[in-house]
Image (tube, rainbow, N blue to C red; front, side, top):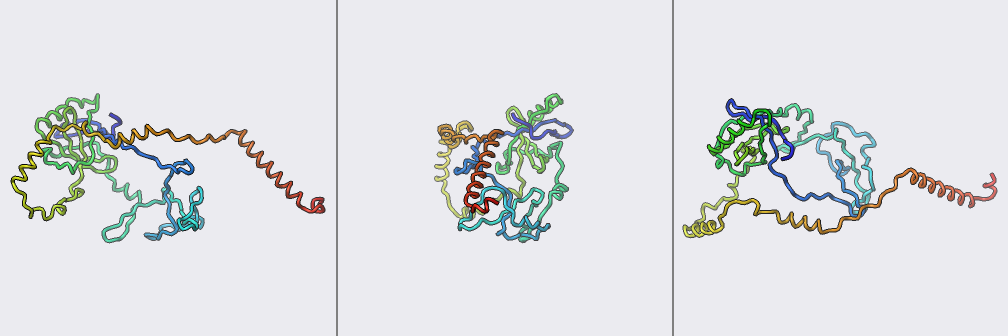
Length: 306
């Protein structure tokens, strides 16, 4: 089942049920890293500001002289035009502020302490405020699914089973709200066949209306014969829902491609022993002696003598 993301309780009326929340889904997308094929090294991303970018708001702190021209370590890059690259200044985490552009076009910034001061407190209880029929909730409101399990050894099993059976018999789901991590959520607690599930829901103002997409459709005429023909087609394709019939064919093909490819050749091991370091130093010293000897040989004899 994995690790619980929240531990608390569900309450309805005077009944309190200790529960744990577990993610109900597990995305299986294949995630790639990015590499530089010229060096075989992993591509990294940095927080930087560039000299050519105009400031959006008046800086709060003056830059130190060296900061204005500092660049992140690494090989020197070149611009597309062939000239020197624009100066990039790494940005420390402590110097990052969040900003939002208002509808008026004004930019406002907010600090981490300001956000912390208004952050909602973590919830310990999901209080069911009302019960509604599941069919009344449009699936567009569903955000993320979780499984709800009783806390073992806390006397939660029987009231958990009671709520599950009662909701199954009523055909209804419980609506409540709680704070997960730092975000408030509206939730629907619904009965599955053997367990309770919790769906976080989008708030009403987060769901877009499709009305503008259907403007003018009411002026079109559809005959009864056309509707009945379409209904027969639906009946011919009707079947019971079976998720196992709908696999991700692209992911399976991608995994097959990856398994069939030979692995990339590992990079040559870099010798880091003390002997190697001494050897490198001796090579540099010998080269220096040879260069100095050649330079001395080119000088006039009187100067070599002293």
